[in-house]
Image (cartoon, rainbow, N blue to C red; front, side, top):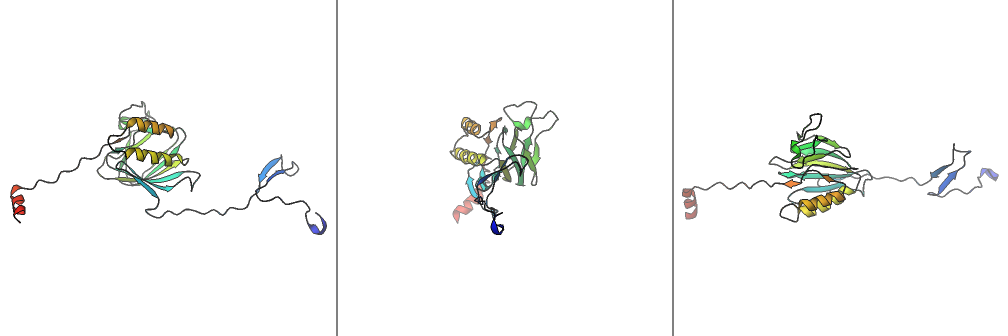
Amino acid sequence: MGAGGVDPRPREAAGDVVTRRPDRYPRETTVYECDTVRAEGLIVPPGGGRTIKTAAQEVTFKVTGAHSAVASTFEVTVPPGFDVGAHAHSRSEELFYLIEGELDVMAFEPKVRTRDDWREWESPSGRRHVRATAGTMILVPPGCPHAFANPTGSPARMLLQAAPPPDHERYFEELLELLNSGGEIDQSAVERLRIRYDIEQLTPLRHIRPQAVPAPAVPASAASQEAAR
């Protein structure tokens, strides 16, 4: 200390890298000194977020890589007849929570990865796909084959978290653009897209649109009466 108890050594500016001597730490240690950051949370109201919609899927971006360094969060509406196809990620982890409706789901390594219908798969321990209802949660670790499909006549709605961000955000943007092009799904284009985003396609992505219910026939007598009015 100098005169008056003042330390004559210059203080390090916030953010400076300071190398401590061994006499102060067990070994030389680099310490980063910085100002305290006041973090702010994110509140997304009902209906909030950016939505991308096609006939095959509707995705709302709730939390993105701009808000979280851990995971992207989406609300996904799965229409009747949509089958995402079995697939796996080498490095991504996903969490699904079914909010509304019903889905066929699976998350296991099958005895044989057949290329047609994952609903025929069975794990070595005897597990098969299940019908998930509202409140069901599915955790998918890296490398685990998984799939979901909507075999019902009503849309299903789920929350999806995908880590790390922002890979799934970019994937959804490109996938929905592809699905919005009209006509039959281009399976080779889907597979090329998924390869770019750490998705190994195991069975095809499908969307079998429900047939429109024809209007009931009007009896001839009723039709004549209506025409006479």
